Length: 335
Ligand SMILES: NC(=O)c1ccc[n+]([C@@H]2O[C@H](COP(=O)([O-])OP(=O)(O)OC[C@H]3O[C@@H](n4cnc5c(N)ncnc54)[C@H](O)[C@@H]3O)[C@@H](O)[C@H]2O)c1
Image 1 (tube, rainbow, N blue to C red):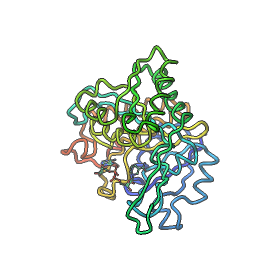
Image 2: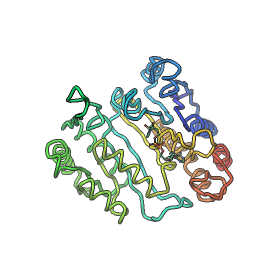
Image 3: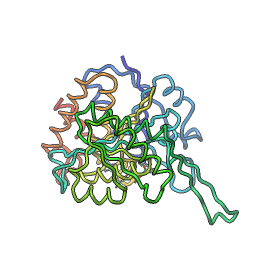
Image 4: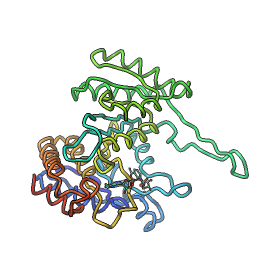
């Protein structure tokens, strides 16, 4: 029996997480889902977006399966996603984007894994006003050699273990000479330890252009926190949308699995959210738990349903009458 903290999240979170949990349970793998609350819903109920009980559950289980959490824009509380990644030192955020047969996209040659540094950079939240009138604000990005080394090491090890051929370090070292420069210099050092894996480096703006012109030139892309956040949404766009991209947040002694997308308030409560991204996050979770057979069963079933196209959510097939629940049922039937 595995113990996993389950956070259903905000917006579309509960509906897609219910589907994902039902599918994982249908494989027969025994998971004790310990449900805990976080995000906007928890804030409204308890006055805190991350109650102590939730942290105690993650402290104990060290593995969490999480739906998207709403973060207020501008003011309000800080992102709980960012806070959890920092608290449990979940330094590696793995976000694979691959072409799905049946999903509408302009490309046929995308198979990119973004390895995003998850604890440093501009997302540390070190910002403040410089004037009393609050008309000048400053934000600090902290990059360390240790943080850069472990994320680039992770990317090369991932490449080696998963039969990948190339790692691209994405940076902005031409302008941010010290912070991004330190990341790039460290990446070059680590790359020398892996002569069997091709290495190259690209400036982030050029990376965006190259990814859209010819995504096939990218394999594993390792980068700092904010660039990884942005590039993984870009790769989602290449393969058919945010509903398809899972993410694993991995640390030395804890891991959290979630979709790349957010709580999608624009489609919440309509039974149209695509559950694929959280289901595939569930596949990453099962692999992490040492349950590769169940993981592959689910992956194959999801691929079949997406390819057939008649029981998928409207983002994948605007003509489909199916919603989140129906797509989940079709995946269970295909298991
Ligand atoms: N890891 C997380 O929990 C996480 C990640 C990103 C954003 N957020 C939060 O989510 C909230 C909404 O953010 P946003 O609107 O910028 O991004 P979003 O990812 O929620 O939505 C962007 C667009 O993609 C669509 N979309 C997202 N997921 C989908 C799915 N499963 N199926 C079909 N369409 C889907 C939405 O309808 C929307 O049009 C914000 O509060 C943000 O902070 C949370």
